[in-house]
Length: 94
Image (tube, rainbow, N blue to C red; front, side, top):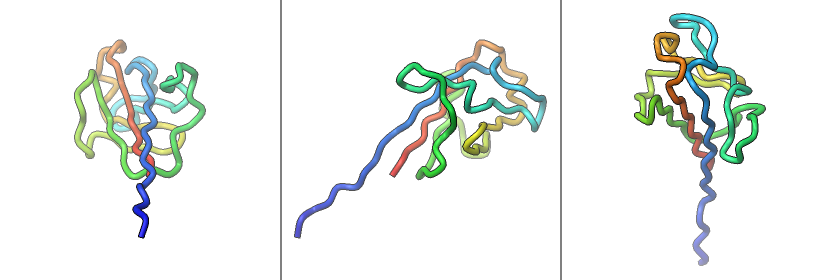
């Protein structure tokens, strides 16, 4: 029997905290405010993924720090971050 390797890929998106809108629990950054690994503006986040990682200033965050849809990532109280703080979202696709 042949061994079939699973497909696994990563999609990374980067922006800064200043790209977000809203305050408190409603603070969110639109997917279109992010840049892809290819250096082009993102149009949406993946609709199907195994999991995602959020990095704020290069530090991985716990799962309760954010929620994500295809159009935006919500980071409660993210408006308190300095506007130049780098935000990276990495989706693992299977």
